[in-house]
Image 1: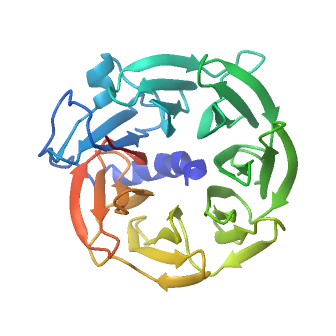
Image 2 (image 1 turned 90 degrees about the vertical axis):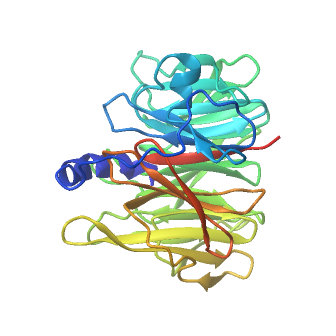
Length: 359
């Protein structure tokens, strides 16, 4: 999950440097493509290396761009691309270490505005997660706040405090749920802040497992949380916050990250071996309506590298799994709903988020 990926990648970059010495092949790469029907991939890049990028893969031509943002804007995206969301005709990108929100036109990839994210004292507030509703982009800031961005004026409005080192967020039941990781705190956080969107105030904090870092909602209003624990005595968990009652229930499915499309949650997991190489890679399917596990592992393909992100195309229902070795270009797998491998393409370093574009 995003709350820990930066710190995990810093560790694994040094461990992997002597193992991975060559980049993926670059077949089917095209510069400066025309945006039609395809998928954007936000690549975090290496932390503190100022090499975040934006890949675009065109479904018709089956070609991928090396760095569409650079092609279209003659400059790099910045340091540590963290999250992105499409709202109307624009795409909003949170660039964490550069502490900016980059706004681009969804059909051209051309930047409309770069918005610095600073706190009252002028320090970087570090945007992590983005959600949209009611003409606003809600920006979760790692300094412990959530800010509103007006999508018409592209100006920052109100900012409110939440928990420590918040990360992932989702909107359900006209409320914004924010996972407070406490990732940089002496004691990790174990709460989800619930913000009323009508009043833009925090209503409550819901206690979940330690270090919640991934959060999604289903169509029934239930909110699902993936947590990391403390990487030792407290293991990670997959949990559900019930709509209406806020009851928290443990789900017996191992999880690193997940996405929900329709009634299915697609959940990837893996373990590390003695050499810090990812092994036992799986994509499980959990039915959120019946609250039952459908499949412990949907795919039989040998997945290379370490899974890093998962997103499901809401139109085709294809499942996209991005993988990384933390130092070289990543790779994107596309699987059918049945788990059959359809195609792959090269991404930038540490692919972390996808947005699907259609005509």
